[in-house]
Amino acid sequence: MDDIEARAGDPRFFECAAPLGIAAIAAATGAVPSFDDGRLLSRVAPLQRAAASDLSFLDNRRYAPELAASHAGAVILHPDMARGLRPGIVALLTKDPYRAWAVAAALFHPYPSARSGIHPSAMVDQTAKIDPSAEIGAFAVVGGGAEIGRACIIGSHAVVGAGVRMGNECRVGAHASVTHTMMGNRVYVYPGARIGQEGFGFVSTTMPFLTVPQLGRVILEDDVEIGANSTIDRGSAQDTVIGAGSRLDNLVQIGHNVRLGRCCVIVSHVGISGSTILEDFVMIGGQAGLAGHLKIGRGARIGAQAGVMSDVVAGAEVIGTPAEPLKDFWRRIAVSRRLSKSAKAVPFNTKPGSREPGDTRD
Image (tube, rainbow, N blue to C red; front, side):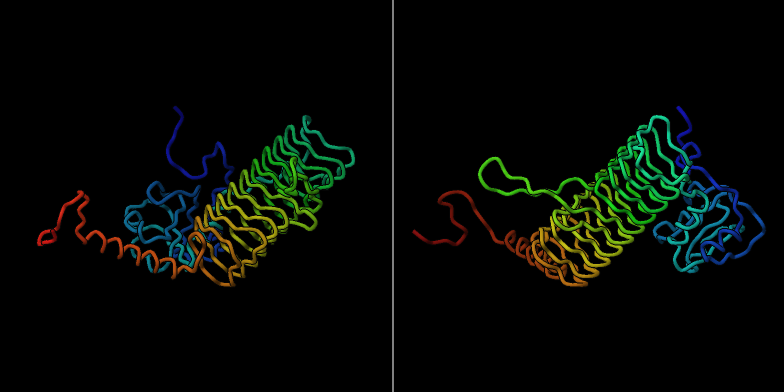
């Protein structure tokens, strides 16, 4: 079998901009080097695997023992943890190691640039407007009147529907489909996602049901990311909106007319029913479900597997089904556990006609 050593940035899959010097990494991340002897680093690697030419990081005290044994060339870490480094390793000191690591890793492995051109197998309508710098992959389909901006990448077998407008530096992954959508800049739709299909709207009268036309759009503002196999329905009479900077994990369902504010985070398997509004900076844990026509206030946090059936005020933290304030939830759990322990302490005989010791009844 091929080399299966656990390593970051396998060159078979990730292009690398190395080697990079300590000064360049420090300038990009804002970290302060303990010294700079001019050494060059060739890749990023975890502490336990790093060699003298590798950059690593530490952000969790739990892994401090691995720091003491690491042979990395340089380590990004908090100043409080620098004492654990072996002699000769460069400490890149910062109060936010994880952020610095993200920046540094992107230095070594930047996102691939668009390779301008249209693959011969792609089907592009003659009325589509495609910037010359854009990349259209194999067997991709671009509909009539679509507009694709500078340095966009359309993956293989992806579909960009008629009239869709994409800003600059957007990416649509393999086998994804985007219709009835307006995108800002730097939007990333991961493979297999479905954007802009009809929402779940029908009139429940006599059989068969009467479908309600879905005449809205999907608006994806700047710097939005939509995870693999997630689905976002277009609006019925108004638009479905995903606010700037928001991140949706894989396998998320967004119903018609839903509106997300800026920088919302929606974790995998969340379902949000139609016409619900999330204000800015809302976070929703995995597998939570939200009923329709709700308002979730700015900065609210909804726990994993919560069932939200009513509005949530700004800044609140809720969990459980039906969702309730976090403190109330854990208080109820504590009471239930105490009652359970109390019940176990009470003697209980299930045999018919049996008596407890001292029972003198006839």
